[in-house]
Image (cartoon, rainbow, N blue to C red; front, side, top):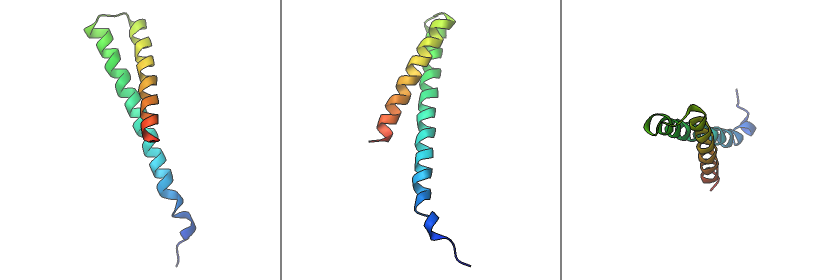
Length: 71
């Protein structure tokens, strides 16, 4: 029984792409959680302000992680 060798070269590229998206999402979530906790509890900001800053920093962190992963 032989394996189909035509499928093997594509698999590492797909696995690498999935790992990159996972790290980008993890980076965005970590940055969002950090800034939310900092704003909300350390700086006593309102909930709306904390969520807005968390969304902003999460988006920036995702963009930075994406640009670094494509380097």
